[in-house]
Structure formats: structure tokens, C-alpha cells
Length: 191
Image (cartoon, rainbow, N blue to C red):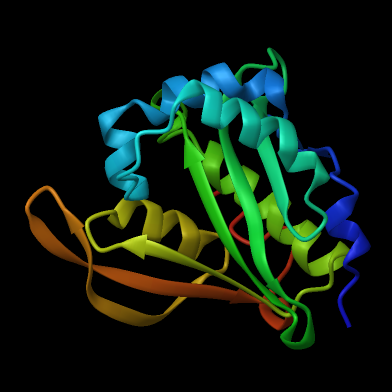
């Protein structure tokens, strides 16, 4: 049985280099800037052009959503916005949910994403008590796939030609991590 109240709590999770905090209106401008980056859009498969107004409304309202968890990734020392992540599409009877993460361009290749992912997975498995967390990653993003694998995710399947990007069809890989195989230090030091 999951603890759905843990989704409504909107925790602050602190790691060695990052802090995950509830997504709020103060993150909207930096989030909007990141969403304009062509590489971030490609890696997340984002076709929609989000306006600042849309993101302000989304960020401001995310704390009120009791059925999901949206957190900003901040640099632990400076407080700078490094990206955002979410635990959503929670299925209480089957104790599983979906995960996504997006980093600002200058936060990649530094282990930031792996640290943030491990923090959220620890919360998902230990506090929310989910059994399974899944994600989707595009076949043209092997860097993200390796990072997810370091955090305990395994490829479970492939949705063939499920994303149309830049004039071509791409496969989407489905990956999942299970509570039964989880340890909080999964992939520690390999970020």
C-alpha cells in the first residue's frame, strides 16, 4: 500500500551537490529559459512552445497537486536552478508511477541528473512506498540511458517509431526501477 500523503507533502531532498525543492513560481523564468534551448527540447522530445505565462501557472500550481510530485533541482550551494523532475501518473493499486527529468544545458555531464534521480527514487520507494517507477528515453539519447542504468533502471521494452523528431521517426525505450532492487546508494560515485 502506498502512502499517497507523501506526494502532497512536497519535501525538500538534499544531496551532496543538489537540493530538490518544491517547484514554485520563483523557478518559472529559469524553467522557461531552459525550455527554449534546442538541445533540451530534443532530449525531452518537447514539441510544444511553452510560454512564460504557461510555465508561471504550472510552477505556481504544482504545490497544490496532491497526486504527483514536481520538484526543482537547485545547486545546493548557490541555489541556482539546474532543472526539474517529476514523479507522476501514480497508480495506487499497482504501486507504480512515472518519472521524468530535464536539466538545464550547463548541468549535464556532471552527475547532477544521477544525484537528483537517486534522491527522488529513494523518496519514491522509501517514503511513498512505490513498487515500480518507470520512464521513457529516446533511442538517440544514450547518455541519459547510461545515467538511468547507473541509478537502477533497466530497459524493459521499446516502442518502435513512437517519436517524430527533426524529420525522422525514433524509438522510445521504456525503463523501470523496482523497489526490490533499490538501494539508496545505487550507482553512487558513478554519476
